Length: 478
Image (cartoon, rainbow, N blue to C red; front, side, top):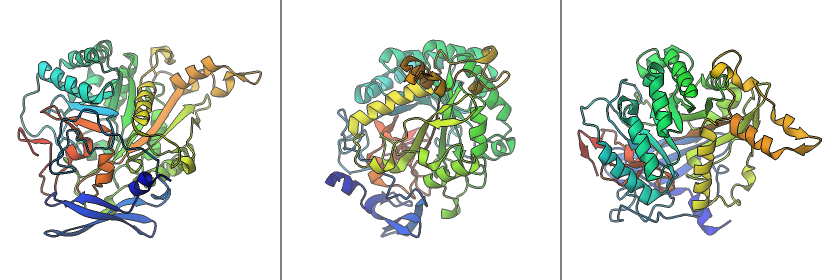
């Protein structure tokens, strides 16, 4: 193995003190089948946070990557990681996705919120300011994927104009991060967004019963979520369901979310699970027992779907650090089953070159193709929710073989219209922050001054609520 790759997976790393946010040394320590991030601050004592539980083992969950430094940097290395983000020249990955918050306003007051939005009255940035920020992002990151977020971005009546501006600037895959309330109430709004060039909807979707929504979002929302999916599909927008997973609230509903999603294909293109991270606004954390790690999620997916999806289906990412996420892509069959597509042999992950900008380009292309709703996608009676589920229509992948020869055009059409993805992202907070992982981040937030800041650094807050980068009461903390 290459020496750089060996060093990338050493046990020694750096982190921050969760109290004062000072950079301190940290060690990954194996205890039984659990891995802990252990660190000590001279002023605030020692901390030990579980970061991985059980199989697949953390030591095996890896993928070789060659560091790639951003060609355009808006931050100069002065204080060192993570205090000079911009991105800076010490960062080891280029962006696959940039996120721009177009409003701080929100129409919910969720128990869980990265942005802690809705509490402070602020003015929305103008379309002119947003265009400037998008041009800055394009100059630094190129035509990567763009997510418009908030707050709740659909509270802006001019969101279609923002989408159109992003298209003119050069972004080809544009997604909104939304709770879905306006899409459920106003089908014409979804149509305007699609006409402006929106590609996909990243929809908050925490479960299949309203007890979960009452707990995490403060009110019954399931019917509105389903209506938002219906209206999005009829407008030609693909939807990704995004459950925030909180132990004891909805971690026993993971299989039910998968089954619900499969009833809504092809409009629902997949699920992107996010175990709760302790920054922004979140339920009270009582200790390591509340942590829900990636391998636990993989095993729950297999157990709760009774083997419909399996741990062996999942692969480490090609873009961000291997310990940040997992993913699998499937073709759903005429019988409602899932067939893994292009499963990576994990044993070869450390030798296969997924590296650098090439890996990022593949990540961008894969997401943009799989998360859009193809024009050829079959909708029954004009709606993915009418009658039988759309996943039970059309030919199966097996039917693309004619006399033992694979019809390539038909196969590619099957992949485009009937692919389904399951992925997860484990964001980092001040307790479990690993600066090695952070330097490999490929998801950047566009700050108010036009810098690109890795997502976890941007949202990071101390135990007392002090942030590194996120605006608080109208000021940018650095």
